[in-house]
Amino acid sequence: MDCWIGVVQQTDRRLVRLAGRLSVAQVPELLEACAIARPIELDLADLVSADDAGIEALQRLRRQGATLVSAPGYLQLKLDSQTERTLSVAPPKTGRSKGK
Image (cartoon, rainbow, N blue to C red; front, side, top):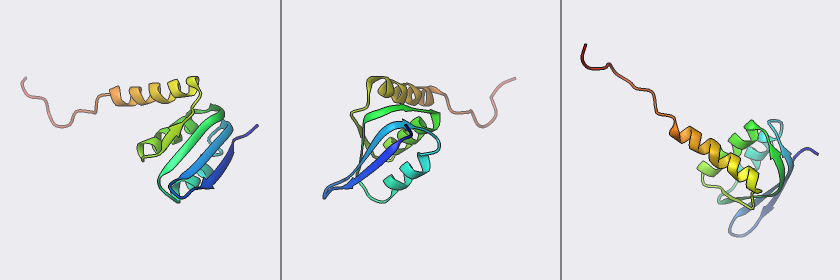
């Protein structure tokens, strides 16, 4: 099953539910569904898997203020571990080194 994206506009937020397998093919639709209104809550309870592009899209939405709820444990670990890797990479040094 591909990814199903359901949107419910509530008075205080937009609820976006994902089910199935989120892949690069569905990322544009997901981003479009989340671009229209704020705040966004993403319900991931029925999300079976996500490829790298799907994980990156979810992380991007989270950085933009979306709340991710009910993520299966393995998916939460994937989201958090890739975020930690991104944060632990030192920024490139600019300028010249002193000495020598």
